Image: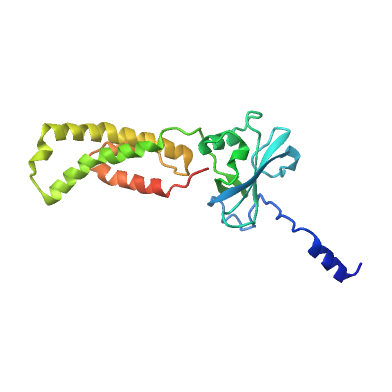
Length: 234
């Protein structure tokens, strides 16, 4: 067969899928810790022997779950992450990711986003330390709890001496909102944020700041900004 015939034969072959990768290009470690969201394209069961020897997470089961991902809108590169099957080994990372995503089977992750991080020179999913806690709807309590303090601040600027902020109903409402509704709501919301996103704050610390009059006017907006910028894990 001539070289031209070889070329023609290659053109007749179906396009080969890109080879999945587990490690980033050699950049002397400067990409370590970088995060990005990739879309799950396929989930399949493979032999544990297919997992690279240098893969930083041990697979102690006979089979492994291989999840292939690409960045949204692209076909390559294809990133691959490995997990032990759920309920079959000591590694429960996949079970925690499924819990965050609100699904039951690994295949249900298809077409969903996973947050990846370059760790120990490999592409690894960012996995929460525990199953989701708290409630994202608690953020509405955060807004409601801050309202009386905002009203007091606005009155101090635009209508100093306004009598209604000294009335018993308003004072009672401010006390309940400031020392109960606001810190409790923020704590519950922050628990959810810490277990479902890459936010690395401390729920208890932010809840304490939310309960301090004056400080909460600054702390709560900062928390809400960080909340808006947090990337979901799944």
